[in-house]
Image (cartoon, one colour):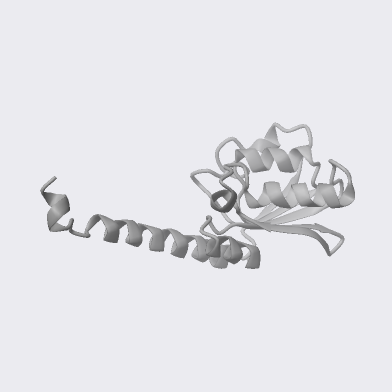
Length: 154
């Protein structure tokens, strides 16, 4: 969850991921979409890339990944392609999730990753809820700011 909070401080959606091999952390990442202006810079993708680079291998057989949010289609497919053994995730994502919701990627993937969802679901969900609540309040506040006298005459 610490990686998710770091992502939030960078202005990205607060999602964090950790790749583990037998209780040893191999890589960690938080969402960096906004920071590096890359729509593929999801926490899972970055954590998988870092683990593969560290191990000099495109495969993470026997490794596990912990994520604060149910992965999207892109991330679920990357998890499968990396042959990650087990996915643990926190909050369920009914809109963009692709593991327990939507396309259910692992039902059709060549590598079937084991899935355990709902780990610290309340805490992970609260971080996301608070982030989007603050964002909505900020947008609402910005729309309610009156234009200056000079701007309103244009």
